Amino acid sequence: MLSVWRPAALRSNWRGVTICSVIALAATFVSTTYGGPQLLYALFFGLAFHFLSQDALCLPGIQFCSQTLLRTGVALLGARITFDQIAHIGVLPLLLVLLAVVSTIACGGLVAHVLGRPRSEGLLSGGAVAICGASAALAISAVLPRTRENEQFTLLTVVGVTALSTAAMIVYPLLVHVLALGHTAAGIFLGGTIHDVAQVVGAGYLISPHTGEIAAIVKLTRVAMLVPVVIAVSLLFRTRMQAEATRMPLVPVFLVGFALMMLANSLHLIPPAVDEGLNALSRACLVLAIAALGVKTSFQALASLGWKPVLMLVSETVWIAALVLLALAWMGW
Image (cartoon, rainbow, N blue to C red):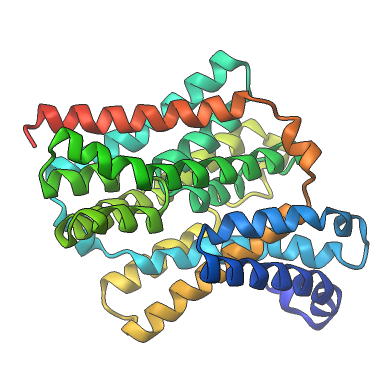
């Protein structure tokens, strides 16, 4: 891990890192100036520079961004969460979140089997929908076998969950109004179903400040599920790839970092200003990683995946929304 920061590695990485940084800055500028999802812009801009992935001078830095910075960004996500936030939502909503996450990942595996897709794709797409969208897709992909097919599917998942999450931010508040859900129930529904954190907050505060607060807490509880899910996926593929098992840590290092950041934040060891800085750094690392993954992938490769991955993501999104709504109705919320 530390070898990537040695002078020789830095000299070989700077070109690729610079390219990814320019793409990330362009994506950030467009997102902040004209609106829209920053990660999706970084992905599309990266795809336009796919030819640079064939350049031997640029490739090491691109790989550094898509692997090392990806893991760093996921580890820093832990600074968003505290145990108090999870305890605040109560027992029943917590059980609902656990059920929604586990069943959605199982749904992904089942749909992948029915459609004849690899089980890894079902776990990746199901985890992205169940936990926290693009960030979860990147975290889970980090412990899957490193193949071109998995990288391509990861990018398609990022595109899909971002688009579905943006659509949900618009449609779900209207659904809340039609179903006449109370502010607390609406927060649980929005936080328990929308994929990305930003869209959850946006949809929640469209209804009321109380709904926005509840939605954010429920969503962060889903984010906390990233730790056991990634460990489970890592162990699954560790046992299936015996040849690589001796080189794979039992628990990925970046996941240990996630847990430590979450613990430090729970114990109030991170000052608010530092916490904001860590959140910004996490976001920057993930944008750079997405830009690098975009550079490594072509439009033709994404198109070659066909319609089945899209159907998987839509099916999982419908499943988690229907499950949470039915559970809220059963609990009398």
